Length: 626
Image (cartoon, rainbow, N blue to C red; front, side, top):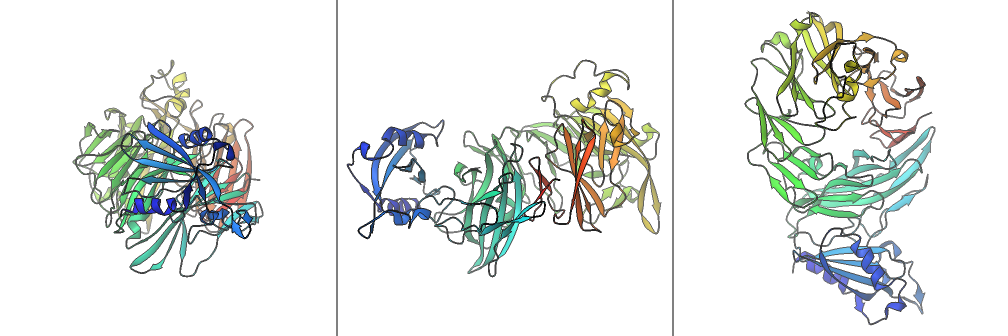
């Protein structure tokens, strides 16, 4: 008997069909049907609803809370709503007749999927309610799920931290933290636990959904499997982005129906209640011993792209229609480098093969950039934030004189730059000889580009000389910041970049403007330059001014722009490795005032902004801005 039918049979064995009239329940059959149908939008199905009775000992966290009469637990009345779809698949929803609460959902006649419970409580017969705690209260975990994650919230000066309970012979790691797009009202942490098990490793994943403003959290069990290759799973089982404020697209590892090995499926997880909806089954196949090179969600959340590393398969999953397409050919990589460079909107990607080839979101080749005789930077193509352009840095020859470092790959000092449009055609280029300042030219990063839709024409006044409104509009249109310098070498030290001069180029007009150094207070409309490292560079395109926050030559002090920076403010973190401290600065652009928070509680790992008040790290520390 197939696993799916067996699990449904076990659940059905605990229910008794009755002829109790609808008036005996708290909600009517129409209300129960409406609740069930709300979970299958835009899917045609034939429905039928019936009332059942259920013994509460199988009802997860409500076991032990059921009413007792004459020493026996009373039977619960439950609406059973069954949907039969055009494909022949069926889904059965179980809804508490008194409260209208959705208890569980089982899928039948889909042997490769089996029982689907909400939220991913694969070992429970009914929905296990997520743990939800106030400050300082230890989590009890999701009842009915073996080995649930135990989490506690502890207050600290200037914030709070989440603590994972220690388990014998178990290693717990925060693999990922995702901040919801609704100004960080929810933060989702993916926690992996591994422990020795017969035949390999017990591999458990849990999701901790935190609401920082309320200092509360919920725990959602996500996977509990035994596997021999955890590395492959680590590259796949994660979140790929939010489709809206509450739903994140994830890949969930699941046991195969025949018990042999593991598989994967693409799901949508509701971070408010942990409910999971399957978007694509058996995607991707088990990659072991290969692993995922890259995976990304496009801007509107309709497609997920997955690219295996050595095999080079590229799958495109249609999350709206449910279809999956594997592109012809291979897009493989050579350790430790990646050869695929995708645009921020997820709708274009360059691939390095006999030069460089540009593909659209459907996998259609759009353009070819021939290979140069010299060396190129890694990554070879650097996209602008608006996905309108990509910059290619190169040297005139492959001489070692152009190499300034690197172990796994060569770090170069570029001599020229080409900027390519969204269609792959060159729109602007220059080399160090043309700028008459030093012998090197590199991309410092990009500004702007988020204010206009892709493909829109430049606004009026976007042409003219450097002092015209064309320069002032560079921030809104998207512009590249270039750095020209002289490379100085010495036997007893690393090469140095000296005499740096910065320029702003707007590819749409080709206008090049020299930038002048200034104080931060002199920048009326500062924009962060993305794509750089070390110090944070801020540019006022209209005034052709810039300032550097931090010291690019000091590797022990690094400054990182935090992702939730808004038009009204800039937020950055400066890490001092020598002092073991992190200083958070929130800069109000209108008032030109800054407030800083220094702490030794934050690590420098994966710092992110969570709403307007908190900065978080990979150690589950929530630091409140002062």
